[in-house]
Amino acid sequence: MKLYRTSNGNFVEQDGSYYHVPEPSWDALVTHEDLHNCLLSTITMGKSVQDFSVPHILAPIGNQEVWAAGVTYFRSRSARMEESKSAGGGDFYDRVYSADRPELFFKATAGRVAGSGSHVRIRSDARWNVPEPELTLLINNRGQIIGSTVGNDMSSRDIEGENPLYLPQAKVYDRSCALGPCILIGSEPLPVATPIRIEIFRLGVTEFSGVTTLAELKRTPSSLVEYLFRDNSFPYGAFLMTGTGIVPPDSFTLASGDLIRITIDPIGTLENTVEQGTPHQAH
Image 1: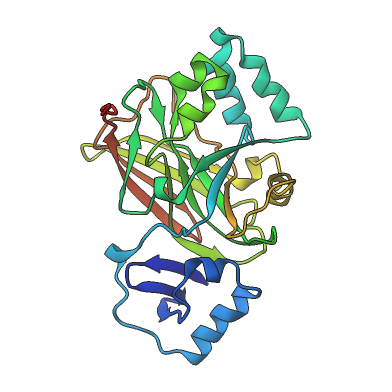
Image 2: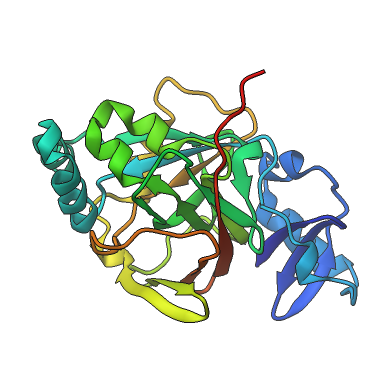
């Protein structure tokens, strides 16, 4: 089953048919004691609708926070060591990759999140920007994984590489995160052979593409969630981005107008265009 948040309410999809979910509150759905059976009941008792429209799909988030895990793939470890070695921080990432405790950081509030078909941004004060395609977990307020979606963790590599302490500025800004197009409902992890694909188009031409699989993810989703919920409470649940195994070459940086497509089957494709940020004007 797939759960969609749209401008016309919440919908559940199964086998190509869409059903309107009576519960209008996204947060109430995410924190439901038995979301899976609630949605099954909607499908069993309801009638499929004909007015489901892709252009009306919104980011599948209400009042949830978005967090992210770093250095969970060997490729991201190598990239972050390389970008920060001149600042003396290269060894940090090797230690984190091998440590018991993962790197977890706050990524976005709902207002900073873009949905599929919307735009993401690159910082106005950054010169080296990349998307990071990531399997993203939806966790309820009881710390249970209830679904997954496609995530894009936009990153300013030059800012983080200048000093690892600049990580929040490299990662957290308006439209620095995208989620969607839906939530694949289910507590069972996706097979480790599941591929994550990214394509970046510039003026209609493929500028970069890459693929990895969940088999390259060093840490288990359940272990990442366990650390996230240590001494933290999330009354509306939370999203957790699980890290990236695809990093473009150092010569690549995003440009305004680029189209980013990230696909994780069987979830779907998250598609966003890039906009250049504008400097904040003091008042």
